[in-house]
Amino acid sequence: LVESLEKKRAPFKDMGAIYILAPTKESINLLVEDFTDKTKILYGPNIFVYFLAPIPPQFLNQIKQCKHLIKRLKALSEINVDFLVKEQRAFTLDVSIPFSSYFLRTSGVPAEVALAEKLVTICATMNEYPYIRYKQTSGICSSLATLFKMKMDEFVGANPTWWYHGSGKSGNTSQER
Image 1 (cartoon, rainbow, N blue to C red):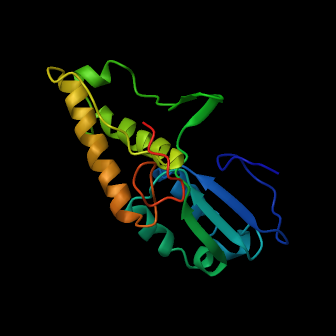
Image 2: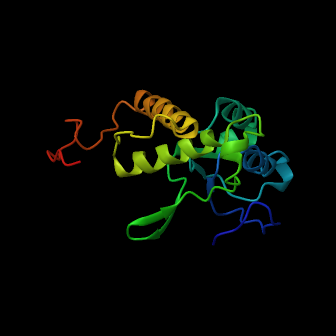
């Protein structure tokens, strides 16, 4: 049974639940809301929470504050699949940011940040650490490349067992590029 967090759901007190969430303020609030009132808890004693991308520390702290959820929590993990596979060799990042945002920079957070984070999840899933090449005169390309490299380095630093093709850490000896 797959249900949306935004809709009213029937209680299944004898069943555990698996939550697959984007690490957004809205989804964290809906998760915590499911466990704030002890008399209205929808699911049984086993709760598994998986995030599509890295979870920011403030959201993790919000989850820690929900005692009824913590008691039932059996797993909490980042699965790094913040993209949609459309075909065997095609994917989409499902970015709702208008293309003009990359040029106008109207928001407080550059549009490239969301794009860089999604690209990191693709590389992590494929065990690739790509070479980054771009036209030097392009400010947008330079900004995106810098952000992506920084996010990719953060990911590699936070996951010491992660390997990528050509790193020498995998059982695969292929060095193809």
